[in-house]
Image 1 (tube, rainbow over the protein chains, first blue to last red):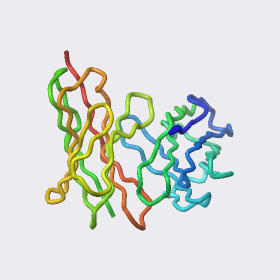
Image 2 (image 1 turned 30 degrees about the vertical axis):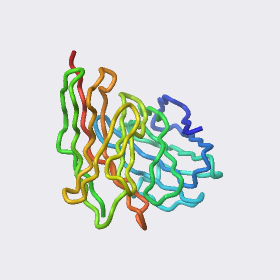
Image 3 (image 1 turned 60 degrees about the vertical axis):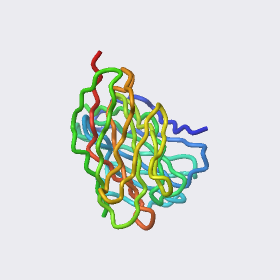
Image 4 (image 1 turned 120 degrees about the vertical axis):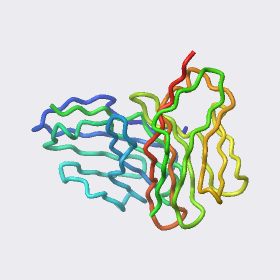
Length: 113
Length: 114
């Protein structure tokens, strides 16, 4: 199984809502990532979890809050987002966080209204 | 810090023609190099990777790439493209120690014409 599963596929939320994005992998990978991708741009790294500990936060606003409950799961909690936060949010995992290949989920298309 | 340059923003190729997408990287040692493909609204799929050893690597969907240290390049090639190859292609570089980031190039959009 080389799959990273993200739910939901699409999400529309208001600026006062609280929602969560979920990501799951069963490849035994010990590093998991959140990326944000705007149209016609490459993915931008947001967070890296290595062995269930947050190892990189790319100066992401606090309205995005990551959580890694266990080695297979990664959540991204969203609160008080802005319309400019609308994007494709991609989760990825890799064997470890030492620059090896990452396997990506299909993404969550987020629209903030 | 590592960086990646993909000089071609958009390439148009006829179906059945050969393809080469360019990628240049900057890194102080031998990097980990990757090519990913992304169809509209989808996630990224790994086409191939280079860690060490043979500088010509084979990937999925008939793609190959060649690592040239002297040119700091990792160009992607395919001898004959199919209409289904139309997508966005990203080259990426990873550090083999320390830095945990995967750095992406800006991408090349591939259009296939009949």
